[in-house]
Image (tube, rainbow, N blue to C red; front, side, top):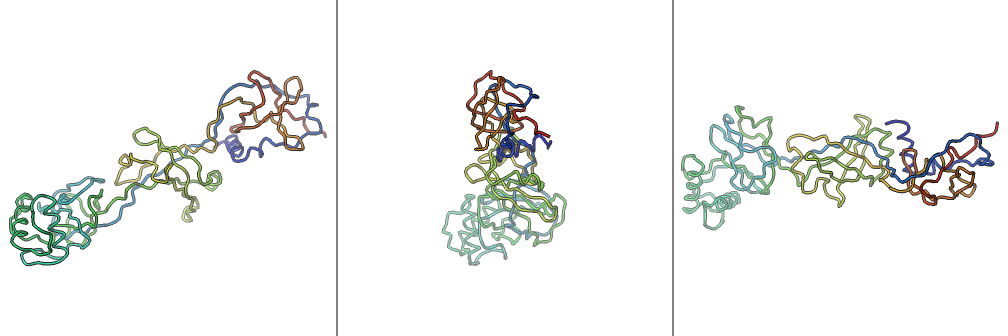
Length: 347
């Protein structure tokens, strides 16, 4: 960022730092000046940084199968529901079912418990069971298991083996599989954490330097270019120092407090972080009549003026300042003003 841009951003944070100058004894006595013509335009102060969008998954299911992973059936970010095949081990499918109690045993005739209720609900959801979810494996549940096994292409034993189902607390949910474990051709032995649930939206942050952090008060507008080309409007919501790198991490949130991506979060890759172009707006664009900020002078009472080419003082109101230019009220288009308006200090 150039020195000029840094000065302009300082103006945006408090224009008086640039334009309220110590008045000369008589600013009209200056003999060295140029002139600038008042014209319509806009001022804005911004800088371009990188925003990082990243899903933060939570582990929700462990593998119970042993053998070779012969197929990975879901892509990262896939939304799964009751009965979804997650992967296959030795060609036998491992499916998702909804339940707080993890799989811990084979379930066959006579079994009772909460895990049986969870299984019955999954069988009902896939159309294999029409009985009550009473938590007991009777004849009806055994028949349903066999129907489901036939649909799954496995031997119709009427017993759900420990390695057949992964109970996940809440379905449907978008997931990613642990690619350190579930990879086609890899060996698994049971007990590995393999299913991770994605939250409703990814997190958005910006790594910034100490100098940049000082220019980003809470609420600063940040416009993020989405992977598809739209603009996600966000604001600085939090700032934390990263002691390991001596930088700051700025958290971003959407206009209404949610994620900046709104209903377009599926554009963010589920299995990796995405670096996106972020335009940080310190001074929003303001359109009006523009003069050079150097043409502004202040008297002892803090009143701001410009000096017309003919030497007349013209009071103005500063609306916005950035990048060495100011939008003002009190002048007319085409008027010519002196730059600089203040005489050099007497020796």
